[in-house]
Image (cartoon, rainbow, N blue to C red; front, side, top):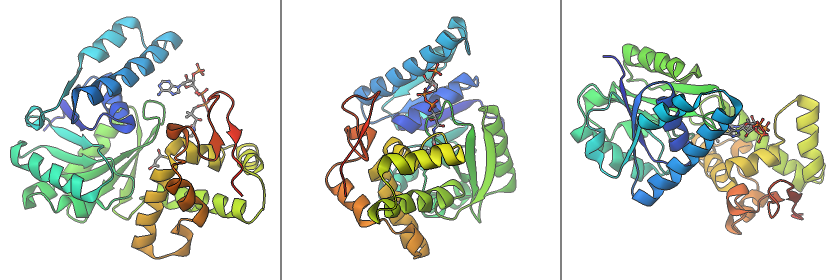
Length: 296
Ligand code: CAA
């Protein structure tokens, strides 16, 4: 089966980015959300991103229009029934995901590949909400924020994924213009397995007075050539998301390095989620000139 039509579940930051790269790669792409408002919001983000690429000359204005014409939004599951692959990027909640997959399994054609963009939930736990046949066609495809710019996709195989389906997904990742890496279904896959303990350790270093927010960020940026220091990155990813991933990883591995530090928990309890809430390790009152928060 050739992949021609792509379905995307969720039009948030990740879903809209995935839809954008699929349409840019030439695939007819339909995005499902729970309301027209959320579709409009997600598509607004896509327009902005495409406009940036057009401004830079990465795409022409004709291509910009063509990409846009390959994208459609819907609030109905039925419109995903004939997709060749569906990439799910809804809220990181196992029960929500299982119930979504169960409904989709009943209406999608038998060949449809199901892929989850989860960053931390076990693919196997989602997969078991579907029929035995579908479980062979169930994988993880984990993209990185901002999806239109980040070149990586982790393609995740469970112990039941068909080899052919897996290779097709790897190939599809390449067609999206990404570099696929192969990962097993272990919570956090490759990137978060390494990134999350690093980010948590930076918070512990701050708690222990090793350095300030700005100095720790600068140290890793300028000393290691990372594009963002750990606190800027945490604010960018979302501290609620980081906390949630850490909790899941801690539950899976029961290892201290995955345990969220008390400061992170308190920040999330206080609503300091990072950029999206206006405050995290930095205050984004002036988004171009964030100032460090006084947290210790
Ligand atoms: N679409 C199109 N263009 C975009 C864009 C988008 N969505 N976002 C940014 N750009 C453009 C900007 O307009 C800018 O263009 P100019 O050079 O013309 O000004 C250019 O990209 C560079 O952006 P910035 O100047 O804002 O900043 P930057 O040079 O630092 O690059 C970045 C931005 C690519 C995000 C870079 O900082 C980076 O790579 N950061 C690390 C991101 C990262 O680690 N992501 C992974 C997070 S972990 C995750 O996602 C997984 C998980 O499970 C938690």
